[in-house]
Image (cartoon, rainbow, N blue to C red):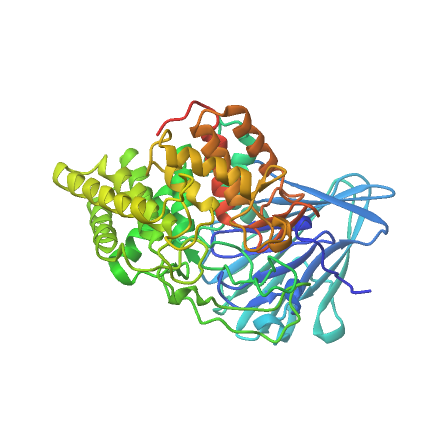
Amino acid sequence: MTEFPLYVLREYAFAADGQRGMLIGPRGEIAWMCAPRWDSPAIFSILIGGEGVYAVTPTDEPFVWGGYYEPGSLIWHSRWMTTSHALECREALAMPGDEHTVVILRRVLALEGDTRVRVVLEPRADFGKHGMSRVKCDHDIWTARCGSLYLRWSGGGKAKVGARGRLELELAVPARQHHDLVLEVSDHPITQDAPPADQLWDATETAWRSESTVSGTIADRDASHAVAVLRGMTSSGGGMVAGATMALPERFEQGRNYDYRYAWIRDQCYAGQAAAETGQFGLLDDAVRFVSERLTADGAGMKPAYTVDGGAVPEEMGLNLSGYPGGSDRVGNWVTHQFQLDAFGEALSLFAAAAQNDRLTSEHWSAAEVAVKVIERRRNTPDSGIWELDAQHWTHSRLTCVAGLRALAQWAPKPQAGKWTSLADSILAKASSTSVHPSGRWQRTPTDARVDSALLIPAVRGGLAADDPRTVATLDDVLHELSEDGYMYRFRQDERELGMSEGAFLLCGFMTSLALHQQGREVEAARWFERNRAACGTPGLFAEEFSVSQRQLRGNLPQAFVHALLLESASRLSRPWTA
């Protein structure tokens, strides 16, 4: 039996500090973390068939596992019940996060009786290529190198060097006491004295308390958790990763496993609009700042995705690892070569949400002008669309630009407002002449008559009126053709049953709830919201897709835009629809 076996994705917890994140498994194993930044090579990578693990595990067998987050934070408690007592390990990445150094906080809590845990520290840099070297212990503090990284470990002074040079410790904690373990990993030499664990915990708690909790929604606890996830995935520079992981399969051995450790413009816009809806202005400002900087710097050449600091996404390549079961290792992303017109429309909708809250500067308005000029010049250029497929005249992309132009025109000076509204009308007229199905609904492209759940988005964003016959007909056909048991699929890929081609797409499920709410179909909207918010794992995390029949998460975990749409839906469903 593998010492730290893999589990289904719903069993992993997540902690992050904005600069990187980690997944924690049921046996207290950190199975995934890149260091020092999101897009760095992983130092713990058993999740995708690499090596490297940091585990705190009860010595008493058998035990069962659970856990919980402290409210409004990503401070996680791994909780175990043995046959005799309960124990916990409080886990976090220290806040505020530093770009060069990650600090992993682990506090073993003996809740009842005396507790013993087994600790294993075996970092393996660069997806498992490099183990620890220059390992030494001085005054109960271990230091080491791991590839190009520097390590310091406090609290494990009694550990022994075991197989393959890893550090092993059996730790005894008296009843109702605790023991702290602090691991620092940096791309620079660690020269300053290690701060006391209590000080690091206090700073982390303070940082999370400064993040606003959410109230007044139909699901305050889940909405607040979504805010914490989005904050944890947003770097100090404002860039938010789309997913904390890479290469986790959407479908067994179908090749659909991607690296999402980058900032997608579209996803950042979704998160910003959700933040605006719930008064999370720090997240809104981060999104506006990141997107406007990319527009200003790159204009028509703006990429669909960047590293969180605005750099280029690396080319896609394999790593010669076995991968998560059903998938294959894959780093980098070929999306960097695509043109996605809808991203420019989503940017305008984001800016409109910021303008409504009086949070647009002159620099942001200049970036909006850039986006409008790109839309005007390239509105008839084939693009890869929201689903990043082959270049087509995707109807969703055109209508998303209509929505963004109309939304921001409401806040623009009169000359711009008139021009932008006219441009929106022109794009809509062209789409109406080429992309309306004979049944009266929108179709995917002028040559693809299928319906697509993405076609719900422009009306929700204000591109078309709720009572426009095309809006109503599209929603009805999406519900008829693409839904199953309260979950929504993107589009029908072939003649098979929907769930045979891919998992239900949770972004689309929450968008369906919003579309129904817009139509005044409140009971249906609530049912869709509740159904889709149940499609999470034990720690309340959402992946991109959900297997309806197997009730399992599919794809990278956590997926930011799903949490963003949960947040927005929870807020908007709490009151009558407003445009």
